Image (tube, rainbow, N blue to C red):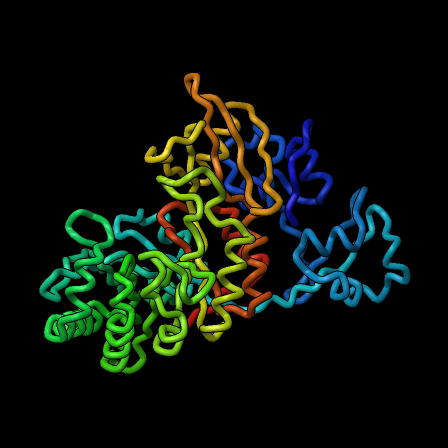
Length: 425
């Protein structure tokens, strides 16, 4: 259940109302300042579980069956069916205990990790992952790969039954994705064969379980060359090694722009074992302030994607970060990248109310910093749960997080309340 903080609320009163403890609310929400709450803040409240198949909920003032079903992300019909003892679903009493159908399905969860992730964060996150995609091996113009010192991440992943994936990117010397570098690789068969040989050598030497190709900003004319590279790589990978491919979020096949045009959803969906759709960055560092993953835009992408890619191959992208912009926005200025926990702390420090955009299904707030107005868009329990509902709605394989380098407890609490996590090792 997700509860929105009202003026005058305390964790003590919320815990009493919903028959839980302050310590539990602090733990699952990662509250670093439990004595401070912001109006509009959404917190996750775990329901009581009596056994593996039945979850119970105690009715509080203002509840209806419809409201409970909506908050918990289940259908009203399923809730009524789980409570045959209720003769009139239009009437439920305060203090009444009702059954909540659990019926969680298992999904795959990928987490991208920068190799410098702390050991503590890694160990706390691995139980929630199917795949750990370690970022990244960068391609050189010769087909060689840069070095990456990640063996400790691979070992930790395997010890937690998480499949480690080798991420390969076309990031150039300047630090950004290079269209020219990718074109050199994709249009020279000798260099391409060298690259594939080096990928296979690394997979075998490092004991990787899969390969993730994240080539971005490809020239439109390289679209078919990219498809052929992926086909060639897939055909040569050792048996049992999974191939995943990261793609830009598209609404249609002929979507214009260097980020989109060379990513052929239908072809990549046929070639790859998993397709990671990067459904984030609508709000981005150098862009206008807005939600990073607005629900309406994410759903538009996913609804198109499932017409081109088998739905059970799709991992929907989930951001694990927030942005803080100066207002008024001036083109070319950069937002600050912060964590979701830092975002909440900024709201608490400045004693501002948190608002919720119903179309984007995302929280935001404004505050003053040394005379400058600023706006923060971030994620909370409610926005996370609304996007996760798309996994069931479109029958997706699961989700993929960018990145897991900071641990946001409420994200994993919400995910765990809705799904089990597949372990393939």
